[in-house]
Image (cartoon, rainbow, N blue to C red; front, side, top):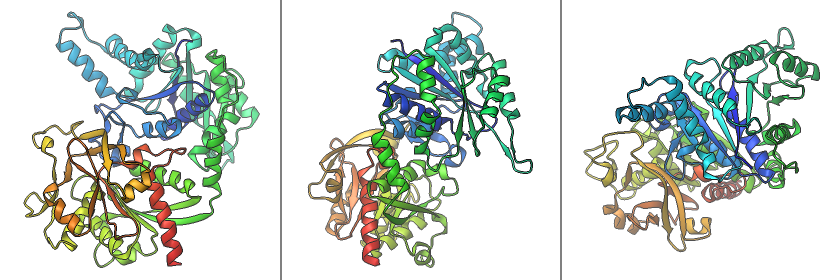
Length: 538
């Protein structure tokens, strides 16, 4: 069977959930026994999201091979349980960078370099790249942005050309759009969808299926109207009604026959019912939890939910594993002071101090960590959160009042967190951090070893600063243990307080590898400890 390609575009408005629809359809096709992956093409000119502020574009997701990518790749991995890579996320910036570099090398033999064919040819090459590996039966490609955006036009043109070049049975187009509800008229309106599809068709792309995001059910008559005026076959207009959880969407799409439409269009000889028993068990657990806990997430980007998307989802996974609903209360770290920390963290069953960059809000994180340590509240610090628990311990246990990270205070006399040696000569910001998966050996008998159920792990990183091992002996003599080390460099990956019920900091990002069917051990452990803490505290 040839590799099949499904292209997913969006219209009317942004944030309709193309990534969730792509992930849901991919999950259904995978559950039929097909080998599936998803890729995202983003229209912005940044090479990757690595230098973007989270307020601009949500969290930056890091893959196993060290690519800094769009947050939708996190959805892809969580739904499919399959790793993505550098090849799964491509931006306009990366496309133009490649073409301009080739032009400077003389690769075009004096030709005038243009959007068509040179930019579109490079887009098509990237779109087909994963299909040439022989590893996948179906590749879904999500086109970022909204139809009508100037930035998206080269990608739409590339899809048009591929629809013409590929055999008809190897290519499918899905358009996600919005059906707004006018409360004053008590009516769903289809005109924005009609205009969106017309704009897509003007670009030469004819959708095979229209998925309508809606707050209210679409009647059969309304679906027929959309099919007629958008020139798609009857039955190829389906609704994506607001779901109580993103993880419910695959089941909703199956009820709407989206996966059946896909296998029929692509002439895939596989009409088996998707095997989703584990997925349904997970859904039942998050819908009907036996217990509840509150975990406070202390961070500097809490005003935007997508800034900590993977952390939020990891709590959903860990909650289900513990038959528990985790209420995540976000707390702006800049607002935390020694005077109000008790009031702000009162009632917390667990505390997570989030990753981040820069000095803004660092002191608030230190105050929150001190409160968790002194009051026996289950605690997890991630990346910068781990570094700040080292700073807090140095100040308040070792007695080094000016202990700090050189990121915040280059002149501190006790740099317990310092820049990694290989980072000191780096001046370019994008893609130069310690990125991707690295090995870590755990200390036998440690909390980390107990949670992981073994001594050898691999976790994903995104940082420039590290624990200053000059201070390691002093830390361990006073009770903070390094229980995870990189076997090649000796870099401290995990710190713990054995005297505390649950206190652990990880230099890596455990949230990136958590999925519904394989919740991350550190998050599972934190939620279990929070449950126990709540039980003890009454």
